[in-house]
Length: 103
Image 1: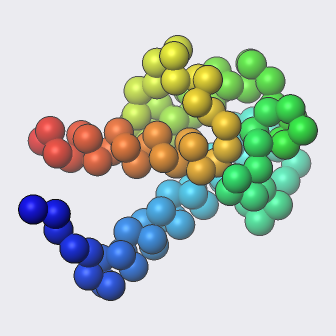
Image 2: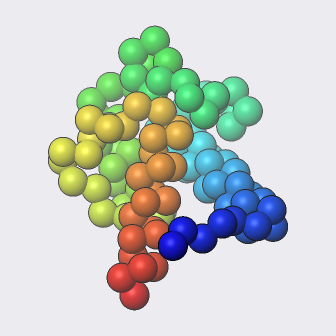
């Protein structure tokens, strides 16, 4: 049987995601020395190429950042899933929830 979210629970989840997204943007700016503010980075903007213009070295830095800042291990295979802020936040949320369920 699935659990229906209450409006309050949905609000808490949304607020937690907004906080995680803001924290991710700030950590990226600091780690990669980006000359941007968090408001200048769209949640769905591509990290590489025409988006933020990051490269493969930056992808490794992002993996290190996620491991250190969010305590979430990242495998080499997962580097390809680094497409946007939202995909990074999704990865952290999935791993965090999996760890909570396993605990």
